Length: 462
Ligand SMILES: *Cc1c(COP(=O)(O)O)cnc(C)c1O
Image (tube, rainbow, N blue to C red; front, side, top):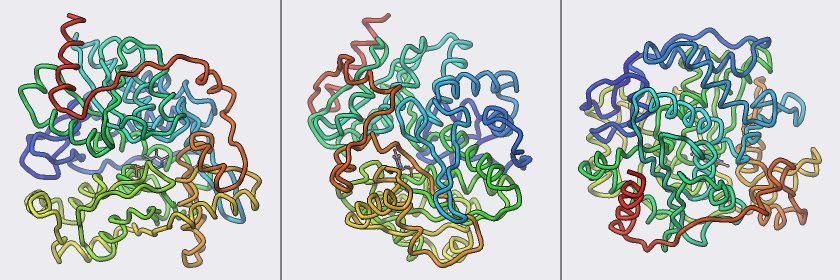
């Protein structure tokens, strides 16, 4: 199984290489050269068994089945729920898929725990060490910290905007106590952090000097690992039941994983609704084919405050008939002018992918948190609420509705309080967070300062 770039100019690589590299050298994203056809999950299979089968299909010959089984076993042992991604009934023919049972209470753990194990295995075999750098507005940093803490072959650098992430989110990043996890609190906003990381990757000399690697949502391993819970949910709901998945979306990695599951034959009937907040570029893209650079605005669902969703590029590549030139030209134009229109010939196919998008505004999000509480007695996080609210406006369907719950309510206690007046206590297993000491370093919003920081750690360890 080879992976090709969505911009058509990078050499094909295997699964392991695609996952260690992240972004392809031509600036594109890796996708499998063809969609493997995989036997759907059986209700009697465990999550680890299904994950092993699916990830083996994506890994091809780059890893053995025994390797992958070991990775999955270790990755998912860190989840507090035996089913990893259990589905709970929330109404007649309506369910919530709970993706927040991982160590940092957000769905990013599902992929990141696998990635942590994958890097450790591959790098220890190669006798190499890598510097993983990630910019975070909250959840990715914590998930990466939990996945890489104590890893022998990885140094993790997390850049978060100083005093702009929620206290609980910050605690998950800064309290690992691990000597290979470095938290940099940047005097700037999330876009500044992301710009620094992007520039570091574009500097090939620096990138090879420190063996730079990235695990943000363009990394193929994240998509591959996330396709698993769509398959296990199909098995749990009933192997032949058509499902309408409603996915709170930001960079669209989660939603694209659902599309992948469908393409690989893992789903019975497929409809996928991306629920977005007031940062609604994705909705505009799917409806009008317009892509426009805009400043992301802060909302109650910060993990979805994204202007242009990075994983849209993979969908674009598919509907463009896998023509990398078309994708590259459109993104070049976007890069230069800050806006681009999708070519006419992809608009038709885009309407036939089974994907659509719905926008929920800030007030609707807060209201939904209260309404869901009234109907079920359960608290949901603001991201999940965007999905749950989107369901209410959709046309009637015979399909079973499944909303993806992307984080635990306790990760956003301030918003829960505002919406419902209630406290959202941390689950028992996370309570000790509050007592652990935080370690982070304030660094100025300056590329040179961050590079020096990374270099000096390399030297200290050598
Ligand atoms: C990252 C995140 C999302 C958005 O996921 P994408 O894959 O970027 O679309 C939604 N909810 C929560 C809680 C998240 O952490």
